[in-house]
Length: 304
Image 1 (cartoon, rainbow, N blue to C red):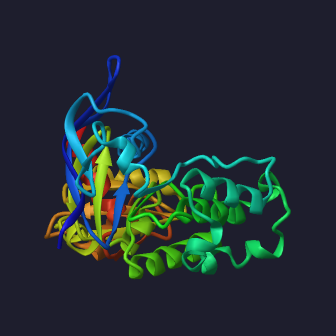
Image 2: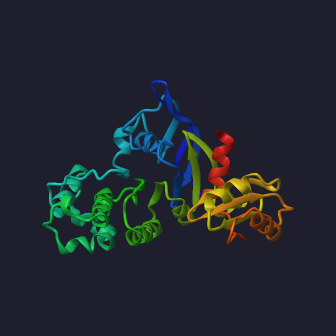
Image 3: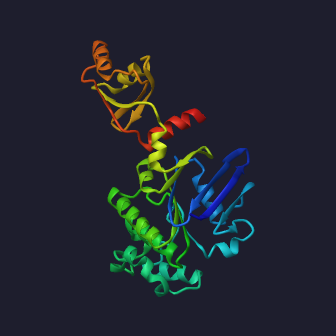
């Protein structure tokens, strides 16, 4: 499969702060590629470079065979970019925003309306409502519609589901799957680790460095060590106790439980008994499947 985005040794500095460090990866054409990492990992800097809004200090980046620094004018017509913050005009109506962005690319809304029709269907009920008065989910749909109005080959989405409710997040990812079926290549960043499973391939980004690239399933398989979830009436004493046990490699908070990375010889039943003798009531330890977040924690600790 051909690569539509190709990045080699990309580095960007802001004074003494290095936002991207020798970043290298490629995005196959017609795929959803996820860029996974917390705030401050360098995701937005990378997006601004790919969207031709910043130039790299070192390395190269090409999109559809065009260099982001030298051939930015040709490239801008091939890209649809949806930044992290809502960037449409809040005082313009839904229809006015759509027509404005169409005019920027020299097209009419009707030219490619078939592409955005499923996304725009809910917005069509209030075309004269100002964009600033829309809900978070509706703002998201309008921004995506404007990014697609010229039918780009590549869609760059920078944390598109941040601050959006769970239902709207699920709907949004369904829309992305439909766009992929229509031949649009999608690079999407997120700090929600659960969204990684919806991507064809992902790259884990931490402090400007790539920690790993592969399919979500193959990446989680790299954790290797047995993983357990632990809970008790008193969670913090449980955390300290588990970290002090010889067969425990790591223990950290994971939602409402603790995740325990253990040696092969770890005995959960024996550990429960030992913890109860230490005065910890209602201790429960059970095996669980590793997630992208578990792998990210392991790789980030090693990198740090």
